Length: 160
Image 1 (cartoon, rainbow, N blue to C red):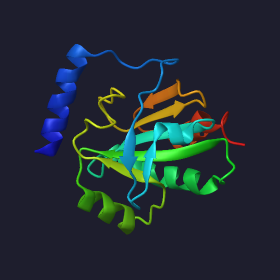
Image 2 (cartoon, rainbow, N blue to C red):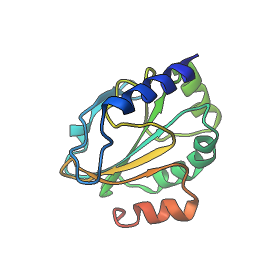
Image 3 (cartoon, rainbow, N blue to C red):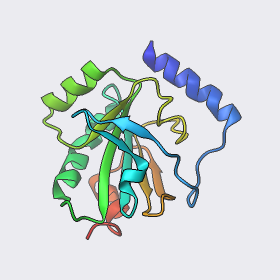
Image 4 (cartoon, one colour):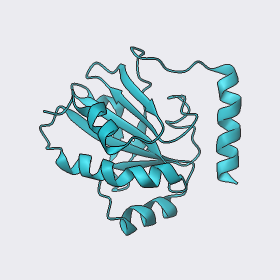
């Protein structure tokens, strides 16, 4: 039912909103990570942010996440880029179980309704990957699953 509501909401929202474009100011957000820590877009100011939208029920997302885990593990605290995953239209129980079962350790937050972060970012399909620059503007975005090579090309200019 949640998947249907999510699809319906985004079908309606596309009628009344415009897609974010490269160079647009990224919408602010505040989310609670699975470890309980609160983060907002402003916490990443001065660094690039790789913002990734996914769900446990999304086949392409499930296939892509191991590569994203490897990318996250390659980052150091002093990296020019940080990674944040937003699980959408799902439950905390499913998200936590999925993360634990797959031994994923990247920072992730839940947008259960799809209204909190996905809607302001005009996410209409998943997975979606967005690079936000240090000034808080959309730098790059990809809709759909990335191959390992495509992921490498997506982030190569931002990894130090």
